[in-house]
Length: 300
Length: 313
Image (cartoon, rainbow over the protein chains, first blue to last red):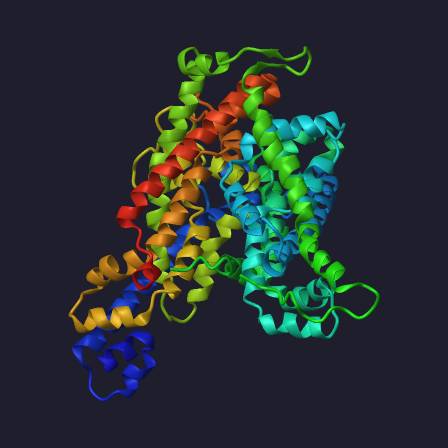
């Protein structure tokens, strides 16, 4: 029994053990098979991305040849320059970056304050309000889309970034929930000790709870970045003027332009370019994405 | 529950004990105030407002008029496009939800072991969940291209001509189902977290009883994972009723409304045709459908969802 488990966990112990037994060989073969399955699956999974990059570096005749060559004959970095400068992508990049940064700041501030309120202070109706918060997560976004639009329209905020940034300062139910769950795992003694030292709640929030919650705050930052960067419906409804668009909206506009010319290689180059910031953030912060999921306490 | 010591030492200074105590009772409201204001202004208010708007006819230009249940009647009896968008969305949901749940669980089971380099694959499979947006919708639009698309090139290697995916009323919806399965990574991460929480002793006990790997999956893993599976099922169904960006970029609802999804039709009604009242009624039907589905699942869940804590409590 123990030997078999050892073999499952590391094939190293297999070599060290005297004599080969069938359960060990079986476990080894099984692991090798799984490995192959995972690698094959990973390759199939990755092909769309590889093809996307490869297409973005080809010429149009190369794309239209059948069978299509897997890799470009000559790598044409020029495609990126042509695609990027054919429409005001630089402008759209800064618009998107601005909206994203403001959203991250607003979300971190408002959600951590509310989460602290729910986790560390007592007030009448707290539990009731927390249930309201949880149920509001189930409410489809689209049910409140139209009246929200009417409000912002009434305020004259159409074609500004305000409808896309101001709501972040009023909290997001899911992130409040995530942070509150994390705050509750912090040792209660810290709070008591700080109170005896004369700290008020705001001090405890800012000097103790926030610095100790960096992993959870990082997860919220990562999620907010992705949501904000990829958002399409919001900008589609609120932004009209060409110079005010975001990357996702601009890319959709680029698609309409390319429909006429059929420049698929430029289309792919523009698409890859808009993904690069996401890929950079993802590879530096991938741990936080995965961790964020577990902070909600959603385990078996 | 956090219970603050209500009789703790009052802060030094002029503040009386009762003043301090009262402050401690209201400061909580200040911390949650931003959320509470936002909830009333951007969630509860609009939610109720859309209910009232659904009984009105309004195009933002002329003042609104009360039409009662007229919009609901039109939707159900006199708007084939609305019925089409509903049926399309249900069709997508029926295939998309089971498929993505099974794939995510299967891959999570594969990756839930100590093998060198396994973390790389976890990252890889998660990647499409973060890149989901216009760029990948454009990528898939091109993958499904009849002549030069990746998929038909691959099928062509087998000597078969693939269908004109997004240009065919029959194949456009399967194309959306294939594309959406690509984004199973976020579910997979949830399942991996869930699998970590299954106590090892349960497997050891099952092994002593002579259970095979299949027995262990059916009788240990799945029951222990059922709360997570249940949660993800509800959230995935809600999400799949709200598919929009991919449809807007890949097909714009075509061909012949074959991929006219619910939210796409809602968007057009509200923001292109300015039928504010009608679109609000659509939004409310969507809300009621999602609510009903969630409640039904909650009811059914008692039969299959197993909460490990309950036995002990």
